[in-house]
Length: 185
Length: 274
Image: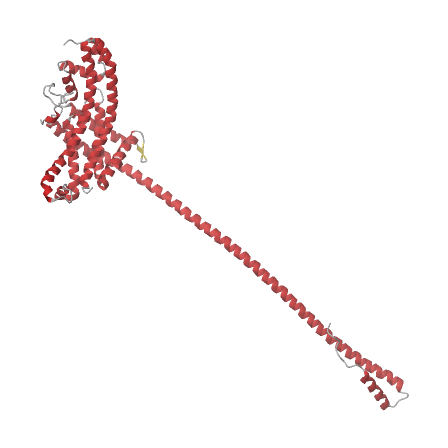
């Protein structure tokens, strides 16, 4: 027995026995028992229990991480779609604008071409008309000459010599206005 | 001394009747009654009731923990398991992790054992006819010795025997201080577990002494006059009930303090720079 003199409080009355008297047998027995108890409990109690807890904590952590990852993935996907949509809209607008521009261009071209062609046709028609007119006039002139000759011959046959007749005709012809096409319209 | 009928009936309460029996046996000496109530003696044919209740507390803790492990379904604790897990997580995260750091896993089982054992032993001590094993200094000395070895193991396993003892000297100490500091630091090794031993022992003992004293007051007053005994009985019972409730709080606090200080000391030896 060890005595701690400092802890001898009011124990003198109790037959000199003190609470601070250390029972060494009890100390050693407790030490051995507690050692055994702590070792047993560590092996079959705390470690398996802590393993269960840690496993669950790991599962929770994994689940949270998985959810966060899925969330991030979904957001990235959403952003991607948003960009895609924006691009598609812009592209559609561009296509539409380009189509309109092209259509206007084609329309202008067609109108210009039509106008040109119309003018060409008109020009051709005018030239044709002028040529036909000239042709008709020269034909008329020939026929007039023939008719004149015929008429004159009928009139003059009886009174003039052939030389006089010729001179007469020639004089008539020279009085005719020169041949020319009418003015363009 | 004559025995009074009133005093027998007033002491119907379990602890009181216990005190009273001892009272009669110890020759009506209040100090002897208190001494008898708190000190170790034979019980149920066993040489030491403190050892018996120590073993009972230990078995109870093992039983509780094994029972708690059955309360897990798919890793989720139910009932008792949830309560045990709460305390285990508290010891692991708030006590071991914060004070020991990354070595804490090695010491968590021991700290859990300290915490649960001291808690259960204190609760057992509050039961009628039971004894508080941690109110015996030999028992707390054994617990403190285990804590002491754990502290030394923490230092030695990390720095080796020489490194561990070299760490006891604070860095940058002038050499002429060594003759003073070496004895102080060696003493410091032992004052830590000594403080643990005395704190737990004194706290566990004190509550029981107060409760016994309050109850012994009834027969003491009744010896003077039955009226005094009747007057003091409700006061004594009320106050001892209050102290009993306080003891529940103290049980948690002391389990926490012993475990926390053990963790802090282990952390001190494992990380001497701090």
